[in-house]
Amino acid sequence: MAGVRAGASAPDSGADESRVLAAGEVSTGGVSTGEPGTGRPGTGGLNRDRDTAGRARNARPRDALGRPLARQADGPPPAPDEAALPPAQALARSQRLLDAGQPFQAHEVLEAAWKAAPAPERDLWQGLAQLAVGLTHARRGNARGAAALLRRGAKRLAGYPSVGPHSVDIAGLVARTEELAARIERSGLDGLGPSDLRLQLVPSDPAR
Image (cartoon, rainbow, N blue to C red; front, side, top):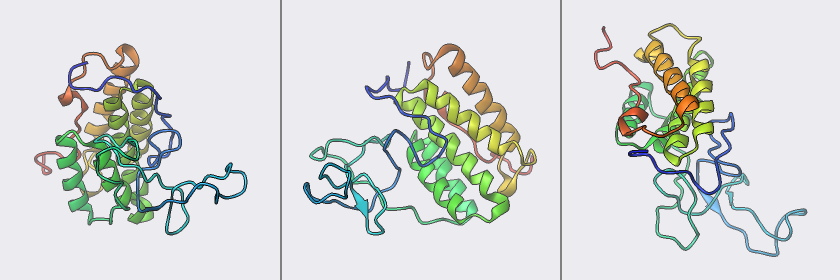
């Protein structure tokens, strides 16, 4: 499959939550790591990595697709939660990341916008984040997770007008991602190149 990494040894879960990219993984960092032998009851004496609020966080460095590496491996540490950007900036930054083949990082930007969005826009931002997760699964080599998240994201977006809030191209995104999901379900990830795994969030000419 040109331009797409082959399947990982442990397939991703394809879970509905856009934050969850594989079983036991969450997308954000900011962790404090406990020492063996001091864990909570029922953990076998091992502490899970946790942030300052006590939430589970994986402290290992990650590769470009967000997968945890060995603790001793070279790689950037997991980033803290993204600060929510204004909608236009969030879309522009996400588009740059998608164009650069970094859907995992785009998902983090969109997830932050989802958390901060007013109620009428929450499905919009969650749907966009799920599309980015679907592209991440595809680049990781997980066809099943990719198709599932692309379809879930498209379903969330489908409730908006064809041109959604902030000029998001709802009609184009839904059609494109449903087509991509169907192709993956039919033929797997073989033959998909980088250009097949990019999405245009807002039309180049929003006034079209």
